[in-house]
Amino acid sequence: MAVSNQTEARPLLFILMDIPGLGAAHHWLVIPLGAMYLVSFLGNGTILAVIRAEQGLHAPMYLFLCMLALADLGLSASTLPSMLSVFLLRSRAVVAQACFTQLFSIHTFSVIESAVLLAMAFDRFVAIWNPLRYASILTSATVAKMGVAIVLRSVSLHLPLPFMLRELRYGQAKALSHSYCVHPDVLKLACVDTHVNSAYGLFILLSTLGLDSLLILLSYAMILKTVLSIATWKERFRALNTCVSHICAVLLFYTPLLSLSMIHRFGKKMPPQVYLLLSYLHFLLPPVLNPVIYSVKTKEIRRLVFGMLQRKGWGFGLRS
Image 1 (tube, one colour):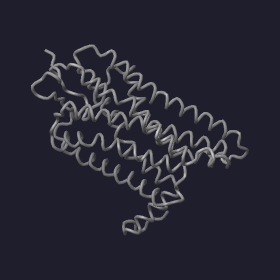
Image 2: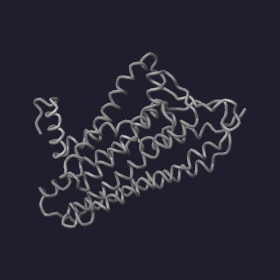
Image 3: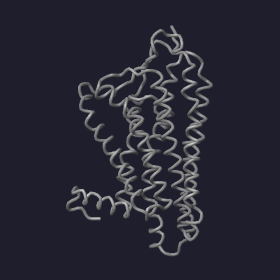
């Protein structure tokens, strides 16, 4: 029997899923999950505070890093409410409108992060290809326009999703596969034709994450070509070393996504825990590790973070 959120006397509810097969260990997951969210908020918040306070870091590379930190904070804040509800409060029911809002937020910030990673790849290409014109090509105004375009693209593409999902009818079984709402997960619970919704979701995926990943690969192909034209190995290594942090961030973001795609195509018999793990890694790991990577690999940020910790009395014995 089908039910609709417009005609039900009670509000339409979806049931969030915890990680199956863990038994009583679910209670202990609150500790690592809480630690991950704490590191994410503190790490990205520290990156933003350091760059904002230091005038010398108001360069394109660091402005893009601020955008990445904001995207990570948004992604963490999007998944946090339902994760806490499931693993801490043991409450798995979520109202449909809250679910649709969450999936809009999750997908929007995920695509924003993908676009920022593409912008950072372009930044590294310009810095290596033509360092003398770097400041004139990537001005503050240009970076600001790129930031606005990144946000507008993601918001405009994902804004129809909650309204399209609200018009669907859903069956009696409303159990999702994750501890948060994502578009494919909700869509598969509909008991009416979803070809239009599926096609639109695929269009968004290909025109954002798919296109961005190809352009990032193209950027690094051009970077590699430029680096190989440099005369000395020392200068080549120095140029490539400026890309290490960004390469790590790209791998963190895209590797779980690519793995999910490969398993979906070729690993039909994989246990469901593998799908869940890769999904959690895709949404939870980048916001945690990105600030750590950039703090460790970027000398200026590392020095300022250690200085901030020492002034607060938390960094005894740290050296930049």
